[in-house]
Image 1 (cartoon, rainbow, N blue to C red):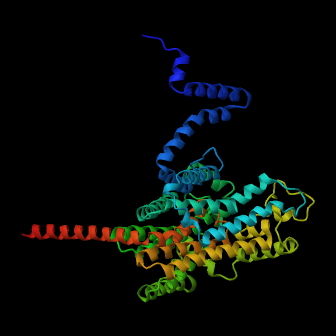
Image 2 (cartoon, rainbow, N blue to C red):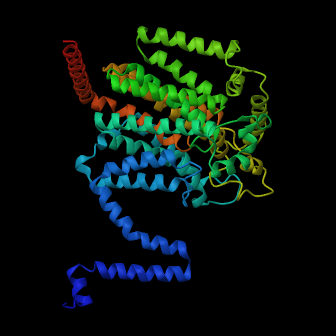
Image 3 (tube, one colour):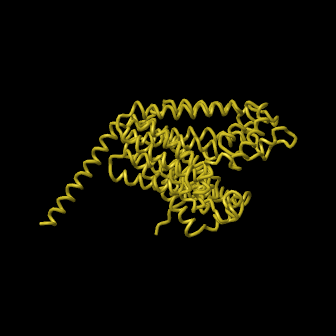
Amino acid sequence: MNKISFKAYTQEHGGRVSLLFLLFLLALYEFYSVGFNMFVIICLIPALVVATLVLFEYRMLAFWMLIGINYLIQAKWLNLPLPTSVPNELLQILLLALALIDTHHTHFERALNLMFLAVGTWCSFCTLEVLNDTCGIGVDVGAWYTVARMIAFQLMYIFLVFTLYVTTPKILIRYLIVWGCLALFAVFWVWKQQHIGFTDSENVFLQGRGHSTHVLMGGTLIRYFSIYSDAANFGIGIASTAVAFIIFGITSKVRKYKIFFLVAGIGCAWAMFISGTRTAIACFMAGLMLYIFLSKSFKIAIPFSIAFALFVFMLAFTNIGNGNQQIRRMRTAFDKNDASAAQRSVNQQAMKKYMAEAPWGIGMNVGHKNAPANNKYTFMATVPPDSEFVFIWIHTGIIGLTVFLSCMGLILFGGCRIVFFVLKSPSLRGIGAGCCCAFAAQLLGGYGNQVLLQFPNCLVFFGAQAIVYILPFIEDEWMAHEQEQLAIEAEQKRLKEEKKRAARV
């Protein structure tokens, strides 16, 4: 066998072997000087390069990976050795980079809309907040970015990714099916928790930091959380998802889509009760109330209103289902004298006294880890916020909260305007209405709990709202796709009837 010199081999293969050899030496050095984690990171660099090249060729694969990872990342049994936000943020930045590189197939013009203006305004305000030094601890860019990324920049990433990648009716319907399948998996998992039991990691959560909020009434009532971070996050997220899929189902013309959407919607509505999250009831009702307005159809609005009224009447004025502890807990959402709601009101009144002198908030760079012990705002930095809006109010003040709520209102208003005035296809209008109603439900959830910007809800519902803004661009293609599916169903029905007739002869 002829021997090949190392030099000749590296020349033939463009120096790739030399590069890999140098990376290996660097990995050994890092292992010796830093530790095993850095050694693993260096060794993974070639795999990351290959993965990037593959994703550039099949960039929609990265989009579907983002959707799946975002939904599963909070599962207690997953235990990834990374901060929760890292996989999402890396995939979002990669998708945006691929879109910038492949400009010939990227519809940047579709991003110029009211939602972009609103999210851009909020991101600009949060960028200015880096200069906020209310607590007198100086500017800490790292601490500021940690909060700004969570409450602002991730919204821009989500908006751009969904706008640039959901470009055809086939991608849209595929996304809705993937969303529905993930939601049904969450429903299955909460059923599994209730009837089969919890995993070891879930039990650790229940017996540890989640015990006081998830194990109630002396251990006789468990608030189930499925694959979400906690029961409130799950209850409100799954209630908003139920709103979306029920609306998708009743407006879809294609039978297979209608059945799938309704199954997903009804399953999510059931799981909402299992969570024991009272705010979820209000979110579910608010979403359905908005749809009564957006439906533009008496045939839909009248039965929908009757069903909605009966649902509210059953919970507020009857004892139906009181044998179930979860339903009894949900019924307390209508109790004006509920102790939990009263305590929340007392806490917020105390916060107002502190925040009166901090109209710009205590700053995004201030938290329980670095708040000065002798500062008068230390209480605000260490008190657990009871809702997403309170968290924003604490860190950006009444000015920031006003900007945020105004931007969210603009996003919702712009989506509703498209549904009500722009879209002509009833089924596509149903998809837009479902997304808007789910977004409104989630916004209400942000008032009651810290869930609006959490995983997986942030990407799910802000992404759905971004989809509403691209629906006018794909409406003609959608109607053609829908007619094609209806023709296939008609042909299948005809063949089935012919087969029945032939069997009778």
